[in-house]
Length: 256
Image 1 (cartoon, rainbow, N blue to C red):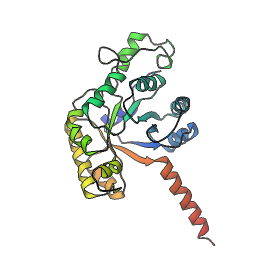
Image 2 (spheres, rainbow, N blue to C red):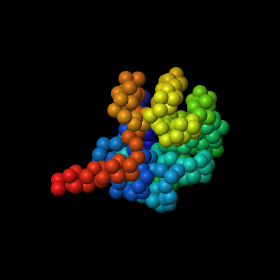
Image 3 (cartoon, rainbow, N blue to C red):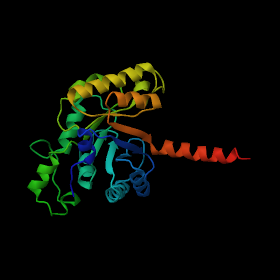
């Protein structure tokens, strides 16, 4: 049934939270990430072909193992947002957010009237009727399920206006796509990108909205912690697993 996201509340209480982008569709992997100690997993729909049935199985695995299921969508799709929240997704990550208008559409899709335009369903988030609909609507409308991801110069420029909207739980950065958009090539560690990320974090702090960093070096992690950042994306499971598998093979090969 519906519950408040522990991720957002823990950050507000000054605790650290850690998430991972899931690009390998698998309920079993979601369980592994939970038992590895991660707090939230972002099921990716931007770059991964996956069915809604697969997403639902992953949501169930997350619920059973105790990790918050988030969903990254490639564009604002009002009906998809509603179905995802109905299924148990705790946060919607909006890839390549570039305007307050985009975010406003997502907010309207995520909230019930009078705050939004979301349609009502008495499904699994109400316990199939255990929670009365008025109570469910009240609980849902007190959440902050929208997480814009800033990955372009336009997004950076629009951030101040975006942060004025209600319903935003966190802002995420996409340094790799930002570096491409700035004409720097695939260079997420470029000084211009790093400065843009710091400016984003400052803007979020001024609006009292958590900023989620995706450190790409030990130095960046140290600097983010010194700036008081509490939310961290640990990267993508596909890349981490590939690196671990290659490192293991290399260690075995070096023994001969």
